[in-house]
Amino acid sequence: MNAHATEEITSAVHAAVQAAVWAPSVHNTQPWSFVVDGEEIALRADSDRGLRTGDIMGRERLVSCGAALMNIRLVLRGLGHEARVRVLPDPDRPALLATVRLGESAEADEHTRTLCARIEHRRTHRAGFTETPVPDQLVDELVQQAAAEGARLTPVRSEAAVRALAALTEAAQEVQSQDRLFTLEVLRWARPPGSTRAEGVPAEAYPREPRRTRPHFAQRDYAHGHSWGGESDRSAATSTGLVAVLTTLSDSREDWITAGQALQRILLHADAHGVRAAFHTQPLEMFHLREFMRQELLSGEYPQMIMRLGFTPDEGRSVRRPIAEVLEERGTT
Image (cartoon, rainbow, N blue to C red; front, side, top):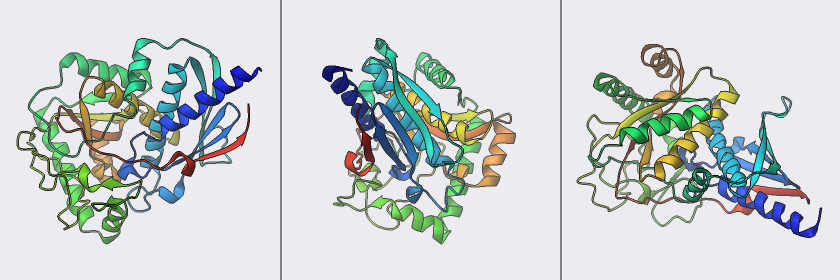
């Protein structure tokens, strides 16, 4: 391999890892690390960044890492390389979630380039939306994005079902807010104003005085009694938006990674059309509520994410750790 080809591969691999860290993760825990060995990227789960109370099985951690894997795949394709992916390649190394190698040259299509351009722009929303509805055509496209990754996105059209999901979310939030371990875990990832930590949820990433949506979907209490939060005027942003649930047919570790990849593809496609997402994972962190959802609302499919989608003038803020903190390099091409 000549020097120019080697340099091109090295550049592509590093660009893919740089993009991976911009994936969404629960509480912005960024529960991943990467090992680069020549033209192979290994994606590993970082158990030290897991939620020992809210995510005992590691489901949300793997969904987060699946979103990072989606970014790797997109960027490699955007740079003209097929990504050869092996998910859970070694049963004896459970922290190794996937390996990605550069495959044959492949020209990126316009859609791939569009998604790549949104990776660092996408932000999680934590309030209401404007009254502008998400267009039906875009909703259909988001459903297709999920299906392309082997998951299902179900827009919740029934007002009764939306109310039920809102009630389950509020019930879970109320219970968790009274649980000391749950509360301490959330506070671990809450960043006070002026914090320089490159992880967790910034105080400016949610409203200081949140307005209730109709129906109301409870938000996490990252401020916990402090007067933290953004100053933006959200007086017009009280719509619930479009409620949707991401599901899989089974509930293995591979399914969780699949769900994460589908989730990120949905979010990037939505962001390219000016639509942002708010997440509500509280009822999914409680076995009986998640099982109730599965059996009574989702025809037996396993819920992996509850989200609201809509338009907002807010750009939002986010932070990420420096690449040096998550990347280990072992070889050269």
